[in-house]
Image (cartoon, rainbow, N blue to C red; front, side, top):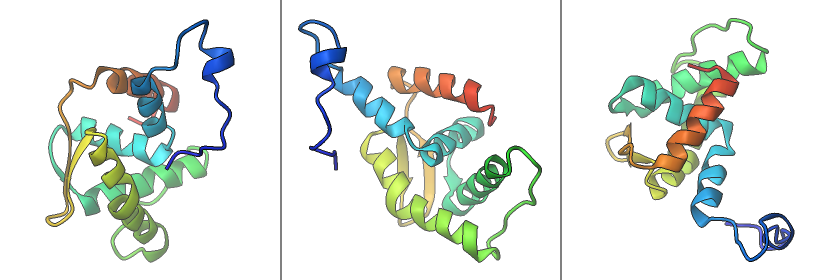
Length: 138
């Protein structure tokens, strides 16, 4: 849910008579979470559907590397409860449903598969490319 107490930036920063594009707002909001960006990077790299567990393992690994400032980390597994289980739960209950609602991914919670939605979401793809070049994840 959006914070309704936030200042209205359209008055002072968007230019005379122009509002901020709802598409731009939605795109930047989706990409504001590193974990959601990692989901999109991995799905784009794989090119097809992946299991929720596979996705959680990769994101746990990338987050460990990012938190260690790029130092190598061991590959996480399903038996590593703290980080992996938290990532798995967050993906299942928060991040993937949000990306699915925005039509960025297709998430089948029942079967545990997730895939990238069609590539016709131009603003998301463009900003994801920019973020990927900055984060150098893939």
